[in-house]
Length: 64
Image (cartoon, rainbow, N blue to C red):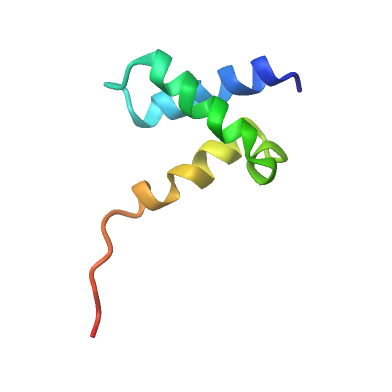
């Protein structure tokens, strides 16, 4: 998939999570994700989900 399409699709997926964030900012985040070879090997939706995983799981409480 061409970089531009991958980034657009990833930014769209990120926007589903962060509706209040400026679309240009989400494009920048998606472009950063595309630069990561591990994430770039995934589909845009998979990469966005992987990157959002810490946010989606909520804050972690310290144990001990």
